[in-house]
Amino acid sequence: MAKKKLDQVNLIDTFKDFKETKNIDKTTLVSVLEDSFRSVLQKTFGTDENFDVIVNPDKGDFEIYRSRKVVADGEVENENAEISLSDAHKIAEDYEVGEEVSEKVNFADFGRRAILTLRQTMASKILDLEHDNLYNKYADKVGTIISAEVYQVWKRETLLLDDEGNELLLPKSEQIPGDYFRKGETARAIVLRVDNLNNNPKIILSRTAPEFLQRLLENEVPEINDGLITIRRIARIPGERAKLAVESYNERIDPVGACVGVKGSRIHGIVRELHNENIDVINFTSNVKLFIQRALSPARISSIMLDEENKKAEVYLQPDQVSLAIGKNGHNIKLASMLTEYTIDVFRELDGSEPSDQDVYLDEFKDEIDPWIIDSIKAIGLETAKSVLDAPRDMLVEKADLEEDTVDDVLRILRAEFEE
Image (cartoon, helix red, strand yellow):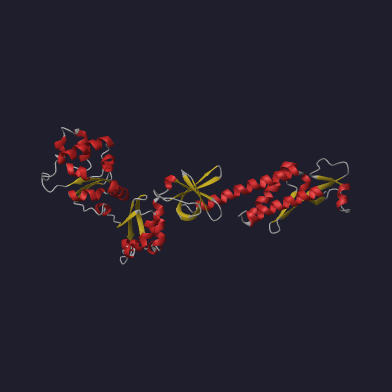
């Protein structure tokens, strides 16, 4: 008897644990617990139809009642659904054959196995419910910034915990070059996506997505948050440089000035968050030529030829503007292409029909450099030896689609021309 009482106490304690520690609303918890009891009753008796389960979430206890039909002594065929008249009289003397008897059931009487099954069923159902709640919570937060505590730093990803102890993952590929996290510090990122394989949600964060920069700007610039300024497009090379095009429908508001702030006050905090990622803010326009011109700033464009069908643009510049248009490591032209959604090719525009006395056309090197290599370099707007020497090596590899060794050979030949 004492053992059964102890089992009942342990069972109620288990129930209270679920009530007090799980972040689940009362109505849902009651439903889950009732389902758990009924699941065990069905496994034990083959049906739960003649049982009433009453859960009291405030007290953290429960009651189970079983209804059975009174039959004459010796005629009981199903002990779960029927009770003999003699046994019914032990409950109340006025019961008669054919009446329904409802009696309280001590769940501990079903045995330790039933109690263990109940605990396992409760744990499984509540775990599934927590997973559903976690998925729904973060599915609604995709694209928004959250702050979380760094819990563990691994080679390929960083594990963070939110205020409720939920695990969030920040993969290395979604971290800005230069990100360095220490356990216990707070990090900010956007919720990139929520994977839900086998009802096991995995929340993936990002600091490299364009949306992260957009949300940071929305937090810093009230005019964006109020809808007075719209961010039309964003292009990023995380940790290096970014360009964004903004627009205002209010003529009295300068969208670029509002985003940058007085002496850069609004943009400085964002730049620090992004590890000194340089941010260029330009005015958006539906005039494609003007938009490309602004996107290639600070370079001054001489002329632009558009192929709108194929989304290509040929940009002509004075020799001293080519390197500005291309930018360090080709970042400026790459971001301009991303921002405008046009493939941009840069061409050098010479003042006269001949290069200066101190420069030489690439065609003059056909005896030392294969013609197809020269044609590949000319195709990206570099017509003379000095224009190639002034261009970033990485840009020659990427834009001209040449092997690194080939580019190094070309540069060596061209340098030799001016050293002699």
